[in-house]
Image 1 (cartoon, helix red, strand yellow):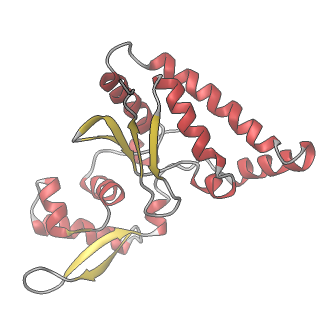
Image 2 (tube, rainbow, N blue to C red; image 1 turned 90 degrees about the horizontal axis):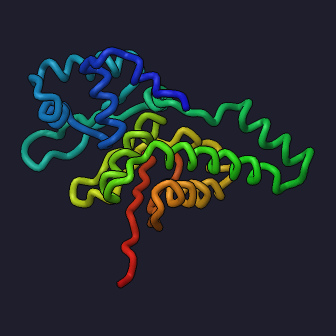
Length: 213
């Protein structure tokens, strides 16, 4: 699987600002400065540079006290910094398979892809507790461009802020089910999946369903 282009860059504050906006949504300079442990003016300079280059845009939002603040969010150009594997070629091949071999062909190809990925994940997971296995799986999902992180209040659940196949999901919604089943096979547990609609505010959570009794 390809790594995000951001992962190939030096860990500069501008990269961290972009990642924070991706994983946490619109943020003011004050909020970003708190997360980065940097000065207000230093972070503001980075935001203005990113806005000038077209990666973020600022929007006024009401403030609980005082004047309205500017909250920054990613633009479509900023979103394109995050890896996507649903290229026109890939989508074209799936569409061509439907024309050549029938309407069920694309889903059969996708099923084979997820079968292979499930085996690769399963082989890479430790044989420890479910929390340890989830932690390792999240590392693999992060590597594969999903911007995943374990939930603070539940070590057996995680959230993903990006999907490299977002364009394919719109055309082949069965991917949502196939992916959940792929992750279940890798972990050896049942999962609850919530969210995961494509778009700039993509957010999907997975949680292990406890075994009754």
